[in-house]
Image (cartoon, rainbow, N blue to C red; front, side, top):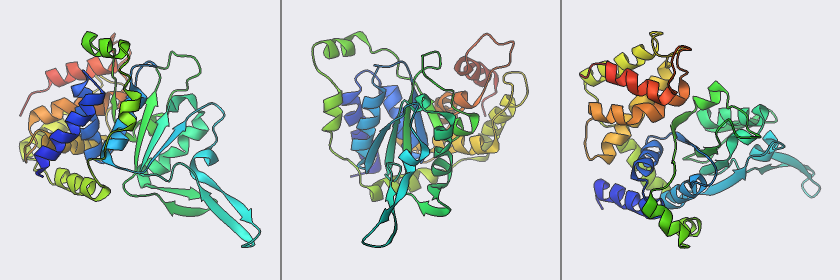
Length: 306
């Protein structure tokens, strides 16, 4: 099967579960093909966990889920060493972090101490436990769901952790026709759990390599630099994007071009991924009455196309 056909099959399977959300499913696939972690933020009950489970099943990866709570400890994620009498030694028992895809459900209900335990894992694909560094399975993805900060019992994610997420997306309320199916009893959670795997880990790695090799022309690099420089100008945001964020934006644009069936990155690819890649990393200037997403849109419209 050709790459374009495989990607189309993946999108169609996800859309069969997430009815009426083609843009969100396409961005989710873009994020994983770019090798990034995904943050899904929205109010409870709109399908965040269902999308995460559908992605895990579709990409055919070893999966674990952790419900983040206020009393969750870092060792609950990474694992602990327990003394084994038969071996007369401490034996390490890996935690749920040792999976190819970790669903961190309601990640901002855990304390900052527990959230920080994910930093090394998300950036280095390894964890240091009791002075020993242990590699995580490959590939390794974190798909996290997050409730809005105004909800009770939530902690704000630190900037260093937000920066580890390649994208943040929101689902919003379903369209009338999709909600009618839900009201009629056609639940999506069980459907997501029955989805067949459409990729193996090796096939996913090949798709990621293909995405990383998508051509980027010099004028397009100039455009990305112009956008990054605009975030640092002080006109739109208190602090601009880091070089790492600029690299992440380009990775996402390459993956978006692959999904669109092109072997080169176009300005439309950058524009399609800029808001989900940048908004969660930026805070609008104090005089702005707009959200970070709206501010990124305004900045993008004010930046000349190549």
